[in-house]
Image (cartoon, rainbow, N blue to C red; front, side):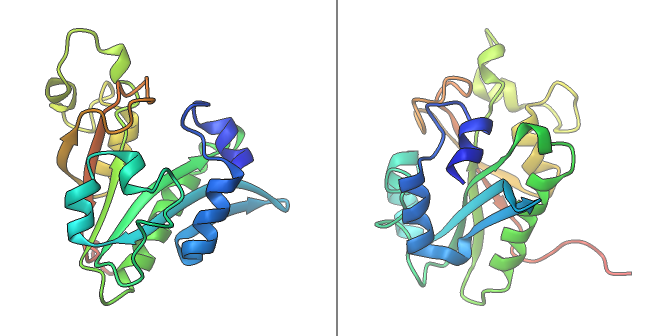
Length: 194
């Protein structure tokens, strides 16, 4: 899992093997992988938190994820299912694996009766290229716009909505200028069955 991260995330944001081990030991059902030819090619992580924990620590990545380890932030009966990570190897992109991993997380969250909300904090990965724009201006376009941030659009086009914007969420994230965007997916599916 850490090897996938080292190839798909900026070095300063990639998770270590120790962080992944802590996540698996703490909440194994929330750690998903995509596998091809007996190799992990995609990863996604989640934890369950409480409303008070999200309100108290949700404005900073290190605080809401226990420095990426989730040992002190995951709550077995937390009413909020928090998506905290997704990554796919560069050579495996274009197969919608990231979408499948996140959708599997959402489906799992919806199957847990005590989960009331499904949230995540995404990164405006292209914000560093938007000189002169505020973060609000940067996000004030329809997600279908080809110039809209692809990482944020990944969630919005799948039904998530922006809840809040957090400066200094992850200061080491140079591409996002430290910003984190709290998003929320609907608790129930909005698709129509045929």
